Amino acid sequence: MTRPGLLVALAILALDQASKWYMLFVLDLPTRHHIPLVAVGPFGFDLTMVWNRGVTFGLLAGDGPWTQAVLALLAVVIAGFLLRWMARAENRLTAMALGAVIGGAIGNVIDRLRFGAVADFFDAHAWGWHWYVFNPADAAIVLGVVALVGDALFRPSPRAKGSVP
Image (cartoon, rainbow, N blue to C red):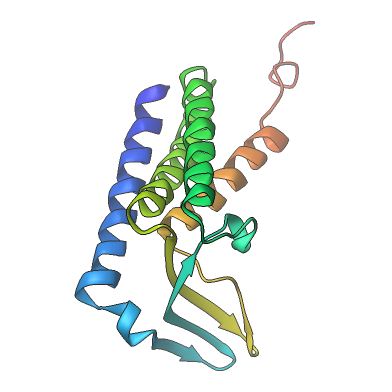
């Protein structure tokens, strides 16, 4: 089951890094800061440049190089644990969900090593309330975790499939 997960990880990593390259160096979002894209009634989706020096939702934020190095190292250790889990995955969904989390984590580690922070730029909002600004790596991590939780909660047990105890 490792192969599908590795393919997902590579695809997520490539998509994440390509989108960040485009936003940073082609669109020059750091200079432009904000570009409105879609507004439908109270809903909107914009590009807004944010440098995230912390982890999810800006937790553990710090500007120092040691903070970024520790966060990058922590993400690499977690990715290593998830790779080991992927090698033992019981089904394709688990392997692919782990691949999404791994690809996203590595994409954000690359940002930390290159820029000292993670480049975030997708800004979804409704009724004046903005969700945290995120990037494709963040979305892949969240969707991967949701798939893992869903698989753990709703996968039929061997007993439910008709096996005898």
